[in-house]
Amino acid sequence: MDQTIIRVEHLTIGYGGQALLNDLKFEVPHGEVFAILGGSGSGKSTLLKHMIGLYPPMDGHIWLDGIDIAAAEGATRLSALRRIGVTYQSGALFGSMTLAQNVRLALEEYTELPDEAMDLIARMKLDLVGLKDFADSLPAEVSGGMQKRAAIARAMALDPAILFLDEPSAGLDPVTSAGLDQLILRLKRGLGVTFVVVTHELPSIFTIADRVIMLDRRARGIVAEGRPQELRDHSDNPVVRQFFNRQAGALEAA
Image (cartoon, rainbow, N blue to C red):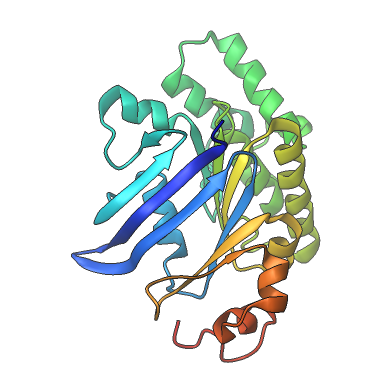
């Protein structure tokens, strides 16, 4: 049985006819925490946006749970998008809605459940991320870390197979960031969710990531793939070694 849930084949992406990344190839097994790394401008967030179907690729394929998201249309594309959940750097919660109301949004959009059921599911998802007692709070009334957790709860509203997290630790202090890492690991173990995480936070990378790919703007592609500890200790690429060991000059031109 094929356990691959994401397959990227010969993918070229960019904007305005200009390729940013060329001929990307990688796979993500079901239940893995897979991190996308690289310096500023290397294309990490751009790759994520293509993987969730926001932009069409210039060439190649992105298979999500057996569906080519770039080629799918109509009901097939909608089916693929319902398999994924996404959180963005800022959390992107609606400030005029409570945390529970934010989580309900996807349920209101994509299901015909009665209000009582949607309320129950929203509160259950918030409980999963440790926010059971804050369901009726507005985003401005909770901390930045709690907003990130609420965004994860919202992304899980439709029970997706894959969660895409764009810089989940951005703007968080080290203790809060560590707590978010543990939440990701708990959800992975408890729910079997596959995570794709865009990050440059080394402590998080070594804590949560089963495997990583590292992008480089000069190479216009992937310069490393594997377990983060192995890349740190054994890579023969100086850019990769410098990144994982926080050495100056690694990504100045990246």
